Amino acid sequence: MLPSPRPTRRWLQFSLRTLFVLVAVLALFLGWLNWARRWDVERRKMEDHPGLRGAYRESIYPHKNSPWLLKPVEFILWDDLAASSFDELVFSDETPAETLENARRLFPEAEVLRESEFQKKPPHVRPKQGKMAR
Image 1 (cartoon, rainbow, N blue to C red):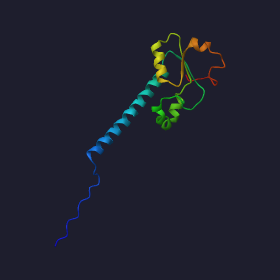
Image 2: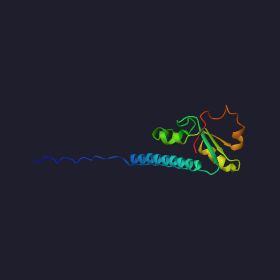
Image 3: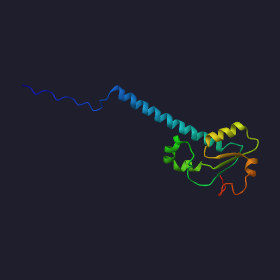
Image 4: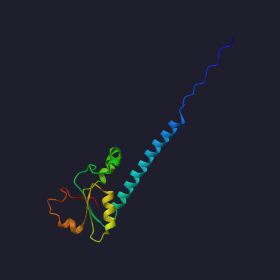
């Protein structure tokens, strides 16, 4: 009697359901990554806005009020987010209201003010280090 041939081993054998789950998880991750990248690009564009008169920060660390979806990005890109985390953004008085609302959406950790509002604040309420980012 001849010995039976040894069965070939199938290394990567998985079901179609497993493939769909893996593709869905990968799509969610890549979608989140794209959203975080676009959010960061929009923040950097706002930092270069001609109406922005000053951006002040009290600390060099990423702010605790940033959106919860960006917490993993803060962990990975600590230095980049620390550089663009502000406590106050001061815009000129001529800046349109839509731009201020956009700045509030992009910088939830910051207080967005017009120059006249910033000048009315008492000195002890202004950021202590008062570093202007521009």
